[in-house]
Image (cartoon, helix red, strand yellow):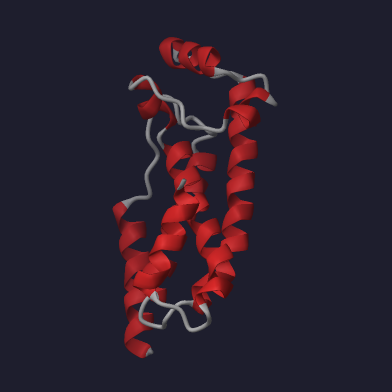
Length: 161
């Protein structure tokens, strides 16, 4: 569903090429952002009775809702969950790589904002990895100092442009 959001953002952000040329990248970026949110919020969503991670991919690692709920309730990690999350993070990184060239197709004034979001969301994946994929018991975040550093670099780049 977030692929559509990426597409809907194109008229707002503007492109330097025909919109159709930028659409695959925008759709991929919407997908990447959404999957990052799903990965970051696994435990929070599960506590609310929801699982947004792709069930087919989880099933490939013998992970289902019951196993996720068991792990959350007991606080015990399960290697199958860790393997599934590791695969999903790697897949998510590949989607970001596909989306990245599209940022340069946006109007110059839109690029810093989208580039900042791109960088920060990818850093969430770094935090998930650093937490050894423990996203059931806590929500990983990119710290304020790191967020401010990324935003400052984008702002400085915009001023230089």
